[in-house]
Length: 49
Image (tube, rainbow, N blue to C red; front, side, top):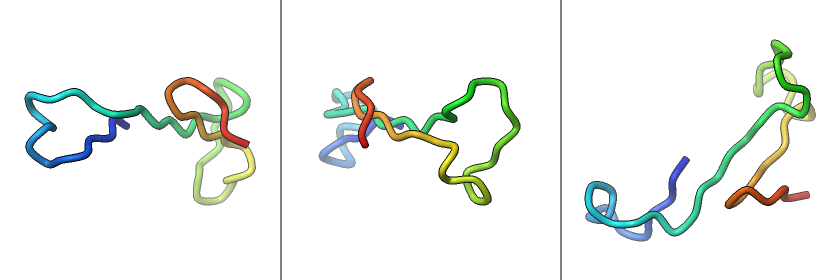
């Protein structure tokens, strides 16, 4: 997900950061609702603990 400071920046501006919520084990069929502990948050590519 790309994060913007202003609604107007969405089409023409640059995002201020990128957030990803990825599974810890690639290729597994976990879903985030039932297995939130199997996912990790990343902001701008850095793992957030």
